[in-house]
Amino acid sequence: MNRRLIIPMAVLVVVVWLVGTWVTKYSLEQMAFYAPIAMVVVGATVGLVLLWVKIALESFRGRDRSHKT
Image 1 (cartoon, helix red, strand yellow):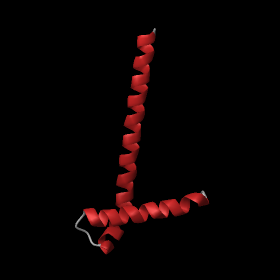
Image 2 (cartoon, helix red, strand yellow):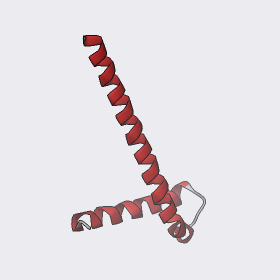
Image 3 (cartoon, one colour):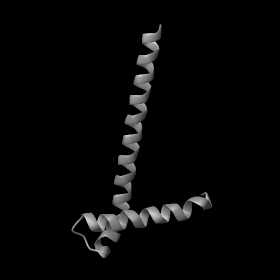
Image 4 (spheres, helix red, strand yellow):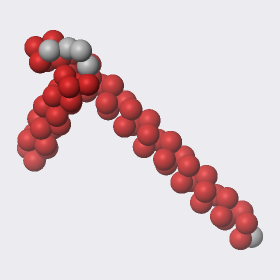
């Protein structure tokens, strides 16, 4: 594992934990239990957004190529 990623990932987990506590009805202790699930949900959401952005950009690029020829 890349050692440079350990601190940013730990910070990200703490941020998701604290924001999850703030947004939901769960206490800090309860959210600590749900933090791994929240990380999976956040990761899946970011992955889907990036996938759809990539699909949209490739679609627009393909449309530009078809109009030029």
